[in-house]
Figure 1 (cartoon, helix red, strand yellow):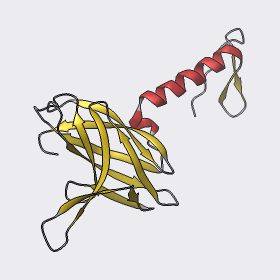
Figure 2 (cartoon, one colour):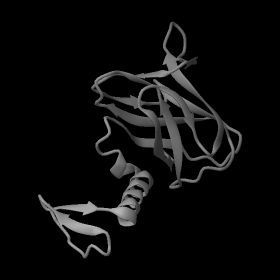
Figure 3 (cartoon, helix red, strand yellow):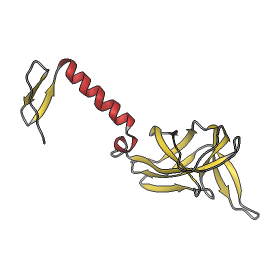
Length: 169
């Protein structure tokens, strides 16, 4: 472990075990800066998180007001199953959770209450399986753009997720 020592006038001193002990305003400031940094760095903050959302993407589109699928990979290392309850994206008015039924006819999308995320599993949300449909896009979506969407889970809470716009979702 790396230790630093400065004078007590700054509010820090070297403690036993090579740890830095902070007091007063400097301790509060350092804590605040670390907390803000973790919130602004989704990849770093999610590293120890038992539920991780990666590879989220939507197709590029030159049209406004259309519906597009949001697909992603979700890894749930938690001790219990979870579920996606809602998704909020700045470029769409609404979202619904879908599954694709393959009955006797052609495959058909069906709205569902939540998307199950089994414990200790990685699942892929795809166009022809479970996915989130983003309804009534508010703008054109250009290949290479990135947005932050909020994915709301039943147990894990809200996960801020980077969504990539791609020609090939």
